[in-house]
Length: 83
Image 1 (cartoon, helix red, strand yellow):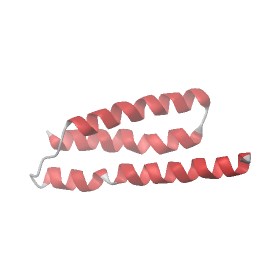
Image 2 (spheres, one colour):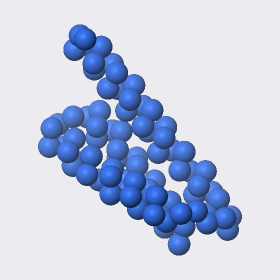
Image 3 (spheres, one colour):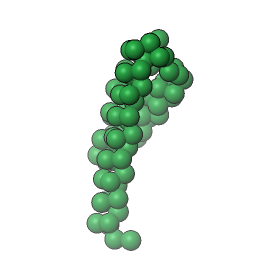
């Protein structure tokens, strides 16, 4: 597989990961309307995204970083609204 193709796949995967994290917005909306969701899922997501972001920073890999930073913020926000 060519390096250019691998690079494109990496950015496509990053875009899909970002969309996945933004799906938490619906859970935040439900939490705020009184339909509380799981607290465990957003906590685990936040920890996972923090670790992947740290890894990406260590490797200077912007695909990994950009894919996980939204998960940190949305995971924390989802956890806070689930309380």
